[in-house]
Length: 170
Image 1: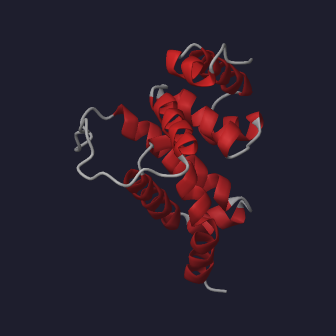
Image 2: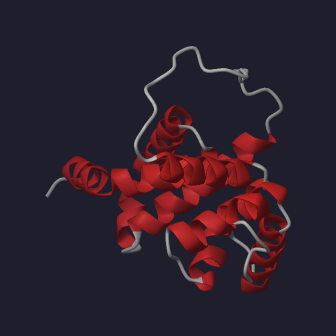
């Protein structure tokens, strides 16, 4: 199989998972698509070497995380959020699910980039602490401390306590 065909097959088989990770990091589908496309463009340049590692998905995930963190460091983002959406859809039957998703996005968005990345990789992508540490280029202890700080910050959030109806379990 030719190298472009292998890359195309990789993208077809992994794009949804990579995009989900990027969405959880960015909180925006369009930005997540841009992030995945940027990561795939960076991966394509080194694809021959990446495929020799036998873990191309982990490599691309790492590119996504490091690119996301570097994007978060930029001051100007080019878009300005508005208080109200211009269009209003019909109320959904699944309001509780939508409310919990919005709360999760709000809580994740309030975290610093590294803490958010650790939570997304550990709990949404179900990676081990060792895998997260390797992906982020840090020690396992750093992953543990960033996870603990992020979870403590989430547990202390008044919106989460109000939504849950009591103190959030540890």
